[in-house]
Amino acid sequence: MARGSARVREEGVRFVSEGRRLRLAAPAKINLVLDLLGSREDGYTEIATVYQTVELADEVTVSVAEGPDRTVIEAEGLDLPPERNLAWRAAEVYRRAAGWSGGIRIALRKRIPEGAGLGGGSSDAAAVLVALEELAGRRLGKEALRRLASRLGADVPFLLEGGLAIGRGRGDELEPLPDWPRPLPVVLARLGPPLSTAEVYARARLTPRRDPPKIQRFLDQLRAAPRRLPPVGNMLFGPAAELRPAIRRLVQRLAEAGGRAAMTGSGSAVFGLFAAEEEAAAAARALAAAEPEAWVCLTRTLPRGGRARAGGA
Image (cartoon, rainbow, N blue to C red; front, side, top):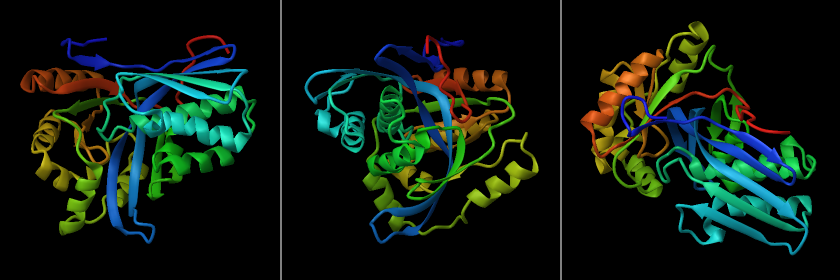
């Protein structure tokens, strides 16, 4: 629903079950903090991050039926070969691990911008794993499902349950944190096409790190004053803003509007975390007016396990 501007959208989540079909929300994530800690032997970057899911979500419908062992995917707004789609790969990984026989059909309705650092593809994959595990009668169990998720991508394990959590290692070594006392309003914004994750990380490796890791400051304030907004930050912000100067401008506008503002993931989306709904709504309207080409979305934080049911069991 628009608030004050037709270009400012407010998104919620749904979970619907109908026989051998499940329709789930696949929520977006933001990185409230993202620290780079060094290179790993496996070629990945060692990170420490604070994840948070929000109500903006894709819709993922998973149907199963007797018949050939075949996975079909219909992705509205996406033009990818099936084997390059993370949701399709999630179904195939689950099929092999669980010994699944029969047909699987996945329908994606995309609302999360692709290549924005909001975890849309990873969340779709997590939703497919959750749906198939439910339809299979919890055949694998939580720990096995988490291991499958880790094989698909660093963000996928977190997005199985979402909420607020620390991610270490590649981001898949998780430590859940208590949810906020109440949902917090969040303004998301993006201007321009996706950034190359590889290019942003490559530039970060060449950039001297002037800032100390931010995660400890975040955690210290969260524990000392859980009702106050803790500081946010992202060590990839500088390298990404060099490639896309508009990122810096969007973050500055949200910060000036009173939000705790930073970039999420490797960009190009940014967020502002606010204490009050009215303040966030005003910031979203002002940003949409000041940046008429930008995508702007007003949403809220989600608690752990936040997939609200909207239909039958």
